[in-house]
Amino acid sequence: MMTKKLYLESIEAAYLEEFTAEVIAIEDNKIVLDQTLFYPLGGGQNWDLGSIDGPNGKMNVIEVRGRDTIHHTIEDTFELEIGDEVSGTIDFERRYAHMKMHTAQHLVSGIAYEMFDGVRTVGNQIHTEKSRIDFKPIQFTEDMLLELQSAVNDKIQLGLEVTDSQMTRDEINSIMPQERTNMDLLPSFINDLRVVTIGDKQDLCPCAGTHVRNISEIKGIEFIGKKSKGKGPQRVTYELIE
Image (cartoon, rainbow, N blue to C red):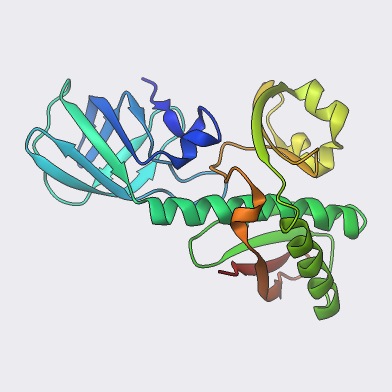
């Protein structure tokens, strides 16, 4: 039982707010649709919120999870049956914040790799107000973060386009080192991947998240904190400049 992920069909699809679908499964307070615009928790990016409108009224979606099968958790009790036609609306303000935050993460990670001897991004958490990236191995000083922040904001001013495409593992590895794309961390059986590219390979990374069509939409970033986790990664927190 698969859910078609409408938000993955193109970069432009991430800007859509409404869709129609058919109910294909109901499990307690969770609804499975044949297709959806709702992004589920994954890849460090938080889920979308919004509503689903069915034959008996509107239902608030409070959580979205799943990989192949996407489960939409409904806030209250509802009356739906398998086969019902529904329409969905996502909270685009929240979605758009995630799009900008996630694209900013790609940009920060790519520039940090170039500036600081191939430092790797080993984790990230994308939220609306602030987000974070885990880097390793590195210990950022305040001056290093200011230098990185300046480089990222200068790059944003160039207005580079963001594109997506399908590439094989070998094609990606022929363009970018595996430690930059974290390809070596993906299961070996995964061969065909959706790749998000900023500009002329300013950054190129396998990713199933939602992104803006141009980095100028980010406007700017500001680092607001850093935290070391023992001998492990150093966590850097950032927010967007509006």
